[in-house]
Image (cartoon, rainbow, N blue to C red):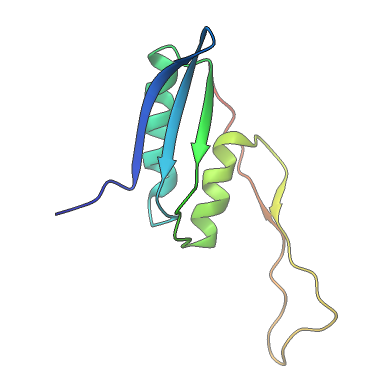
Length: 104
């Protein structure tokens, strides 16, 4: 038995069609599944999206950044700053959102 990682539905709230999407974790491919669900809801008439991360178990940082890029069109999503790095390790550069602006 498999539990869906991305689920969504449309609700009519105070005269507005709102898409409600739940993301269970930042698993490999989460951003693609989430994008498909968000696009499906917009095609059904959603005027906005609520992203529910309650109970989200976490996961891959790269997926979290890609998920963010669905909603944040450009800019730094994650950066690290520290007084010093561990020997032999460097602090990774800031992770930026790719250009994923909506075409509609």
